[in-house]
Amino acid sequence: MRRRALPAGAAVAALAAVIAAPHAAAATADGTAAARAAGWLAANAAGAPAGQQADAIVALRAAGRSRAALRPRAAALAKAAPAYATTAGGAAKVAMAAVAAGRNPAAFGGVNYLRRITNRYAAGRYGASAWDQALSLLALRAAGRPAPAAAVRATLAARGSGGWSFDLTPRGRDSVDATAIVLEALSASGVRGSDARLAAAVRWMLAQRNGEGGLGSAGGGAATDANSTAGAIRALRATGRRPPASLRASLRALQERDGSVRYTRASGGSRLLATNDATVAFTGRWLPVR
Image 1 (cartoon, rainbow, N blue to C red):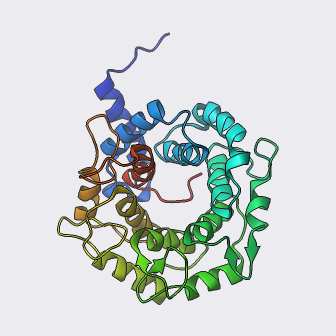
Image 2: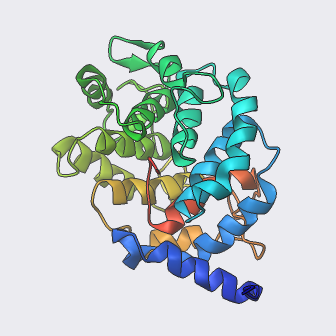
Image 3: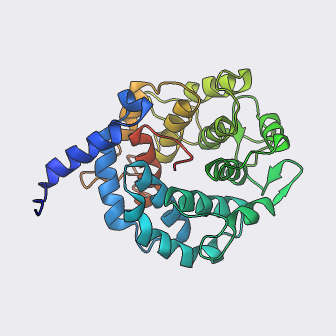
């Protein structure tokens, strides 16, 4: 018997229900926003640069797309990824996408992306930035590999006066988006959300909210941007906390009618980058996604 296609509105509602049902954070997830964002990604992410393709695979998987449905995207990424994944963070993005699509990150398109990550490890550090470090730890977790204890210690030691900086040094300027992804990575690496250092970083991050409850990268009440706000929502959930309703609402306010998400109210920025990050946050999940 052939199944009749659902009307567009019913399809979004059905996907929203699928997204919300399996996750412990469903009470704070916005399934409708996630379904709309995932629909936009599915129609617009093909042909994007490799890093954004990788993020889209993770986001679509978080939004309930099957691994079979992600197979063509994974095949395209496998072709584009070798030239892109020359840093620890780039290799980690590809590795997480491979896992989300049900592929082996140690043999993805004939390339071992876990080795590319570990080849850039020295003295507790992967690469040169908070993104290299955090994404590498997240990718190892996604692949079922333990995080080196020295890497966890180095990450904790790099916290500044509140959170973490882009260059991952205590002397750098703490940023919301760096703090958020480091919190996700440390949680994935086994550091408890109740750890005093993580709790202090969470307090600092939440103190940076603006009047509408959203977050900008620089903190200090800066205008809401989608990437920082989505990262903070994911980080709170990763550390076992419930994101404030105003924080979630500020992210939803950046969603366009077509389902995409703007960078800020004033600037569309890269809607693909913003929508990739926002989709995972809307679903109630956090990194890594399997």
